[in-house]
Length: 315
Image 1 (tube, rainbow, N blue to C red):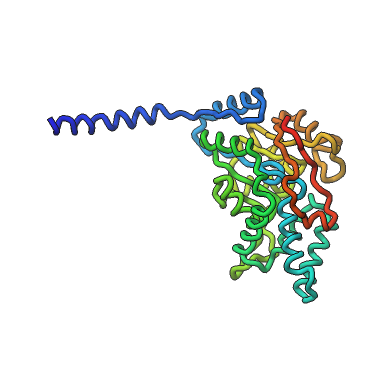
Image 2 (cartoon, rainbow, N blue to C red):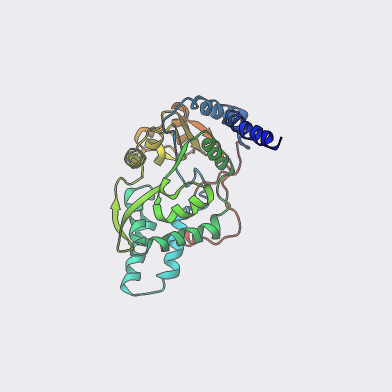
């Protein structure tokens, strides 16, 4: 009798495993704070990808797309704060050189390639571990509540449907990798930013191309990710070329509808606001609350940096 019971258990186990395997199917979970219409569009799209057997890639900008950028960008606040603590009160040659870079950043165009190069120039000479610690420390000090809950839920849905999730930012890669990975569960090697050569254990100012800024973001997808994404999310003019790499959904987060893009940097957005452009090009607009939180002191404010636009309500 005992032998028969054991035999039945052995025979039953594969059936139970088969039942569990068959019974598990991808299921969409509604994203709180977004409309029924938005949820239905995302769910329908994700269900349409179930038949795809090859890589399914989703790419997201970071600041303003995955987490808030008010009142100031984390990368800038971290760099300005570190400069104030380490170099501002000193007169040695290294400190003077670093503060000269800070002055260039303050006076420069924060959407230009020179700007992101200067960030790397400031961080050069530090070890990767030191830069990781700077990013994590300033994230914990002032930004740890800034990840959008809606975007966390979206990423969870994408993972449920078998997507590779990548982050592509114009901020220094090493500064962001650790805290973004820890908070979103994305492997560090899928968090791409502005890269520079590491030599003898120190970060140098030798930039690794392409620089993920404007059209460089599209080039970074082709160079490093090596797949056409099915889903791309961004929030600004700087994400235009990256978003146009998507052959599926192009999601724009908190699109600005006040500033009309003009000049050389505007590109295809010339004469349009970010929202107008994506409304005309089938962008999926979503909104996440992004307001200053806490009574933090910002060194960026001391340096008269213009604060980023506030998005006070979820639409």
